[in-house]
Length: 208
Ligand code: ADP
Figure (cartoon, rainbow, N blue to C red):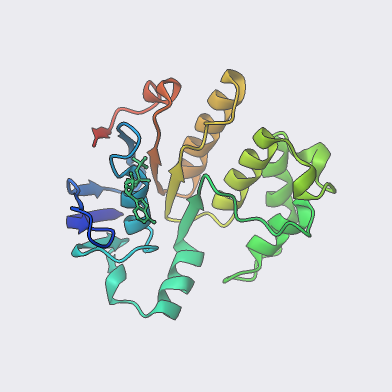
């Protein structure tokens, strides 16, 4: 489902990073660990096609994403990839329900209120649907980012430190939810973290 070969990347004149190859079948998950600054987020950005590698290739569901035009890549990512980043990409002028609805409308037009409600319920956002996102707590914003990353049932979910702002109970809930969602959609889950609470939930781990 996700495969990388010989990936390397350099920011300008810096020495750059070389990454181990990754090969995940559908429903296989991977935890990427490592200290701050080692290149975890860079690897995730490469796998999601948000950065172009200096060398190497990324395949998602058999598609070499570097063979896609910018427009094709945007569409491909919108359909098949779920992104859960530390910097949230909300529309601040919209409320929680409207943000969820908007994510369902691109690139496929899905108007599945039941799914949006179910996710909101499971992520403890059901009582906050009419709140503007700027009025949510940090933890609620993180849980909304998670809902937006999985609402369209992507083939692969990339999550960057998805539990960093969550207490222990919410941490477990979110990891279990991500695993359940991945099972339902037969997708792969790739999580980068330095949160040791997450380690025991995954058997496949790579340390950078
Ligand atoms: P991690 O997620 O493991 O903390 P990152 O991939 O975010 O690591 O960053 C690794 C290193 O790459 C940083 O310490 C920094 O030196 C460099 N870096 C990251 N983003 C940029 C950028 N946009 N421009 C230049 N250098 C960057």
